[in-house]
Image (tube, rainbow, N blue to C red; front, side):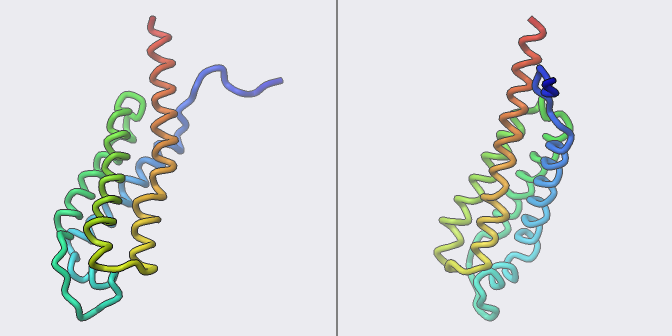
Length: 145
C-alpha cells in the first residue's frame, strides 16, 4: 500500500528551517552591524589592519533579509513571495560580500566560511522550501476552483 499523500504537504520542519535561517542571518548581520571593524579584521586575519568597508550597511541589509525570512515562516504558503525575497536577499548578500569585501580581505578560511556557510549553503534549503510552498499554494488554488 502506498503511504504517500495524494496532495502536497508543507511540513512543520520547513517552517523551523525558515525560522532558523532568519535568526542565523540576523545574528551574523548583527555582528557586521555592531562589530564591523573588529569582525572585518578577524575575517582578514589581520588584527592590526584597518579596512574601509561598508560593514554597517551590509549588516543592516542582512538584518532586514533575516527578518523577512523569519516572518515568512509564520504563513509560508500565503507569504511565499517573502521566501523569494529572502532568497534574493541572500544572493545579494553573497554577491556583495564577494565583490565588495573579498577583494580587500582576501580569500582565506574565515572569508570562505562566511561566504559558503552563512550565505550560499542556506540557498539550498530555502529554494526547496520555496518550491514546496509554491506547490502547496498552487494545489490550494486549484481546489478553490
